[in-house]
Image (tube, rainbow, N blue to C red; front, side, top):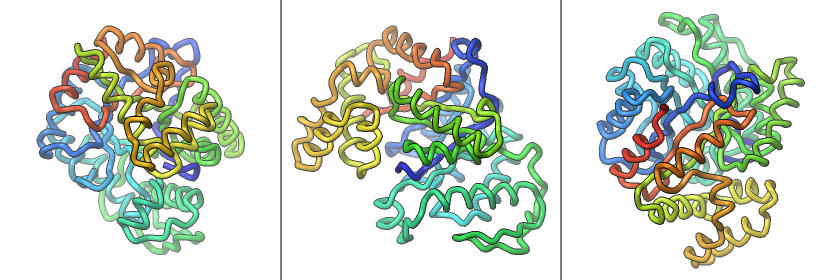
Length: 354
């Protein structure tokens, strides 16, 4: 996700005094390819049985998130569900609103819509759409989706979308699902604070999160909103395994892949947090072909500031440290690309809410 990206979570920012005990614990279903839809459904069922609050599902270049979440909704009862993220360029806002309304219906009100622009590699190369101005397009998408979910006739004249006469031809979702926006850069985070119900934060150190919270607060002020009404979900790459070195190796590799291999957005995000030299080294070595050097450039201190990796006891302690941050309303347990299904399940079990 770029500086121009946003993705938000539902409202209800917990008070500072309550954060350590009141932060939700979510699970971020694997972005890496899974063998079947059933495997993803089973992971969500496992998370529900262990007391996780919500299961988020990304949409990249594999399975359609809306379809998979429908399967999960049909086979679960209590766990919240959400997209994190659904790219805004691959669906029209009207279709996105229809999909959100449908998922809210099939899940009996458990759905949250997470949106974001993704980046030009994905949008232009894979979807064949001009990346354009992602900030403006995100805002307009949120505006139109809100109108769709209201059940009223949509009339919208924007820079990217001109919609007239559309009205949802089904029951209006009650309540309407919250709309979340994901972003890393100052302007995208400000947009989340101004227009969305929440913000999805990722690859941030505690200090980096504190800096971006200033953007949330500025956005809320511009939107004449209370910043406490913007829910903050922090996504953390996690591996809690008896084999400590394996856990740390796969999380370190995952971090290097994103900084080095996913365009410049993650590199710039890390540099903004005071790690410019490391960010550039990881990026240059990865793209120069020496990927082990890129991985090794992420030292232990940085790894522990960005992620959760180690034995089950270590991982639980580190996760609780992130949960105790004043800004955090929920932590989302996500998994490194190289994790096997057995390692994913072991981590889900080890980090289950107590």
